[in-house]
Amino acid sequence: MNDASAPASSGDFVHPALFYRDQSEYLEGVGGFVRAALAADEPVLVAVPGPRLDILRESLDVGAAEVTWADMTRLGRNPGRILAALQDFAGRHEGRPARIVGEPIWPGRSPAEVLEATRHEALINTAFAGRRATVLCPYDVLGLPDAVVADARRTHPTLIAEGKDLLSPEYAQAPAIPTEWDGPLPEPGGVVPRFAYTLGGLGEVRAHTEAWARGTALGAARRGDLVLAVSEAAANSLAHGGGSGSLRLWRTGGGGVVAEVRDAGHLTDPLAGRRRPSLASVDGGRGLWMIHQLCDLVEIRSSESGLTLRMHMACS
Image (cartoon, rainbow, N blue to C red; front, top):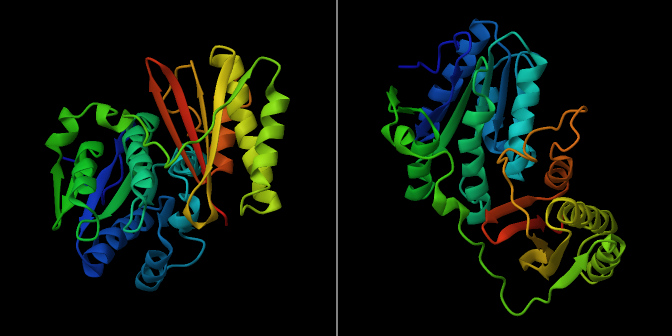
């Protein structure tokens, strides 16, 4: 049985979920993990929601240079960006067992964000396989829905609850990506027209998106981000999705927007776009990577009928 407070052995990736019920359990579990890393002279990254950063800093009272801190509400606003940030940190300390605290799900996340963050938790096991690293993931079991906590049992090999380190039977029985996570995305309210495009029509896609975006609450910079993200998605359709596709655009509450691209393609690599593409890669998910960097939430569903890519962008 793995102990999250002990360093990972060579070739081991350790990925426990820490179930906490109050601030005292949070500080004991996360604080103990960080202190153990510092005592072992291991690099440590703490990526948790902003309010948690403050109480951890005060509790630990460690020098700024000893811990790398990140506000997960910013780093992980789009859950699809988290994995690359964690891999980048581990990569900067190649040859040493990295310690990471990552809290990608907290009360107040939308259901769509929670699902994509849960998908991240499942994919991290594949992405870090064979790496000398430990990623501790805290879960507020009183503040989060029971279904979220149940999914944490399926995405983490070990669990820490009430001071006990346990193997998770649900993890051993779960597929890498449960089929219910890949169900159809909910339809927007009302009728949303489709803009069809084919080879040679990428400029028309950009012009259509730019004209539509001028009627939204997005500022100029965010409108530019939207046009670029849609352009990358449409380019992928033309190159890998059968040479054609369709685009839908609609507004959401609070001034946000959603762009959806559908085509006949299929995504075979679930990590595409979530990990940083190498400079040498020719077809390494560069378009999806850029889309994840530009958007506040990205949802991808691949089925027998083709690929659906939804890109969410908030007003601010």
